[in-house]
Length: 228
Image 1: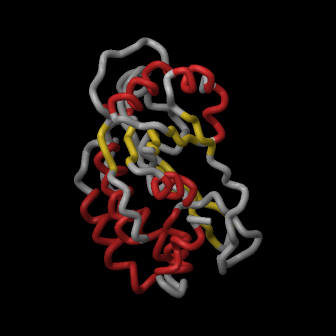
Image 2: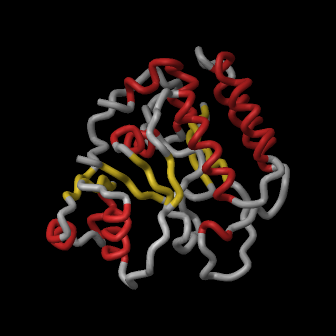
């Protein structure tokens, strides 16, 4: 049995994203698909005492059919602003001082990066290290385009010798599960409904914020709140 997941790289994703990574044998970045504006690729949410706040990486918009891999950062300075927002809102958390240097170093590294995928891959990889997720993070394998999303996903599963494909509930809008079964691949669906709350400041509790919220609040216990 070999379980894989295939997802687009997001900016400092929420804990559910890392839950998927932790549950599979190999995780594949799907970065050659069309970039979607106002999505999770270049932004995420933090919790503040005044409510939720977006942290957004400014993007260049050259043409509408750009892939995620082609997207470039529009201007510098965003990394410092994001780090300032994190410091302002999480500086008082129990584990902030323990992880602040490592996270700050990440923001210093990405300041000069031009491509969004490089920024997202670095953050995801480093966060996996911080919370002790050891799943290999892989680039999408090359294969002839089958011209249809389900066929392409199945082809990737075959190339990677996967028997199980794990995906989120939003994929029910396009996944042809019967087609996967005919090809010898079992589709497994994530359930995000059983996460345990932790000592997040300022109620009400919000599950859908960046993973950094969980790290700053729970430290080395973060994985316990992901892997249920």
